[in-house]
Image 1 (cartoon, rainbow, N blue to C red):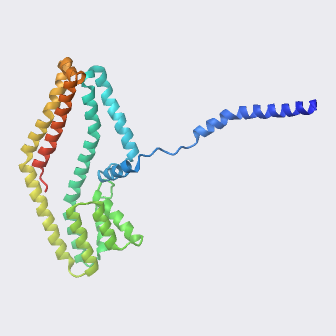
Image 2 (image 1 turned 90 degrees about the horizontal axis):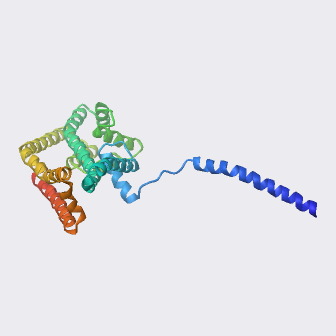
Image 3 (image 1 turned 30 degrees about the vertical axis):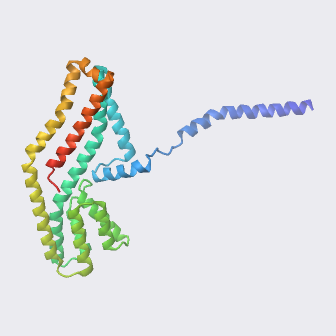
Length: 292
């Protein structure tokens, strides 16, 4: 019995020692195993992904959020060291800069898209006048456009033709195009192409008329934008002046700005002032905007 117990104990000791020897290796292997990347919640990820796609930013939502966080910390940390009283204001401004840049990029892509639509319609009308169908005319327009990924019209045309190649009806693909870019001129173009694909006939003349209408609309918007340039510049100056004065005061006299952050009345004044300034910016933007 003693021999049996000794042998069993020896086997158990060897087994436990071997397991203990291999445990760190298994732990290292488990840590080195590819992990599932973290994803944002769907409520935040889906709208952010659409906004990034519309802005033609080739970056994922998770990368955008992490990059914005790093940028905010990089901007705020030096201010904490040099002017601590100004750090909360800089932090808020840095956090708001990301959405502002995204909205600005989307607006720039939208303006470029609207500017390219009349030329696209004229090209489609010329192709259809020479005997092409709507699908082949769209194919020629996609090939004639800039093949780079920064051209939103060419990107949408290639996606539309890919859906048609996979068996989706052209009218459904055109409807998808109009939903992808909710722009009234684009809805008019998609509707005109859908009618031309279903009914046939002399669609080139109708497309030429639509192109002239789009150019006239763009010309009117450009004229309104030029006439409102001075008002828009005044709106920017008026909106940025309080923030500029706050930054200047924090650098020249940090104690005066410290009152805004260390006292209850100061915090109320700071929050109320920033809120009123934001309301004024939105209000002036609605007044001077050139689009209906």
